[in-house]
Length: 425
Image 1 (cartoon, rainbow, N blue to C red):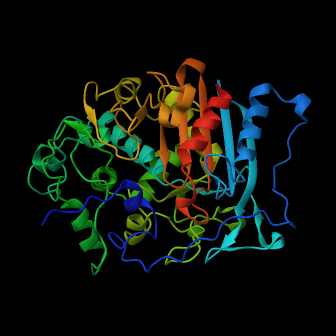
Image 2: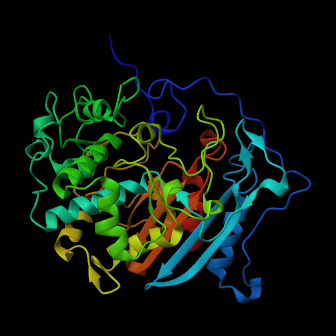
Image 3: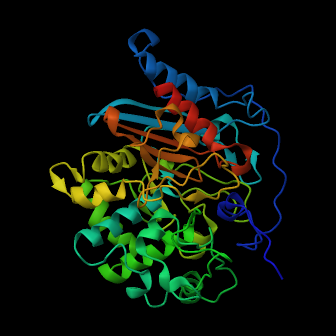
């Protein structure tokens, strides 16, 4: 029997698929309406006369999507958002709009008194921005001579088994040309050992040839997270802490924030209609949740400032605050298009090209907008997050939204990304 194709959004949305998560049927979401007693929360900012024109445009763009728009007439684009822009290492824009929490499970709209306003230091579920950190750890291993990026993963991770998978290299996993599917089935298994075995033995897509075609795959970064764990001798959350966030001074980034964050009001909510109820501080991605909240493809939480520092690290050629975390040589390779001339398959983004580095999207107007160029790089996250680095302008742009609150299907986050990036351009 042929497998029925499952879309990437269907696979990656938390609490949404019987195909991956065995969740209960969802209740229909209500049509959105602005409560008369509530005012949209907007972080204090300078007067319009005191702001530069791009800052005003970004502020206005962010505020616009707090309500339904012509391109999304039934619902707002998100409940809240934070945007941050750095140029030459200095913050030129940092603003927050809307709410970090607006709905409770159902989803049911909270009264104005029970909502939580978005803050500049609000902590978001970063979703697939986790992949950026996993990629950086893999590149560090290459820098230290512990792996050869062009070698098959199986050389280092023998449990990565299945027909044709002995040919899949680490570089292909980072470039999403491995031929692995977007998601893994980990439900109905007795423990994490069994779940990780299912991830490592996930079969390739029928007919796929390693290195031939771009197909976005979360499985690829899941298995690279396991590679990091094996070669560092640390769990992935500890490896991220010890080799990335601590050296960079990032105190607000980590997995499972309910275990380390003192001020829980800083947490930004995601889903409010999944079988797990309201999600706030618990990973949105179902597979990552089943794996305990720590995985190479999703699970990190963090602030806009911390994400910007990661972007600045790469813009600086591998250094930040006087510390070198990556060599210029390995980072240059990672930010070079390794998929020239290759086919890209993405049914939901038909204009997408295969252009990709080792862990990073390159020159993708579908989310970069008019800031896109051959040297532009970054990544997006399913919950509404994105990181964009524009080397020609010495610029880092971070946009974090909670577009998955209360329902990820309410809006297309690429619309907001393009609008904000165009406002900056």
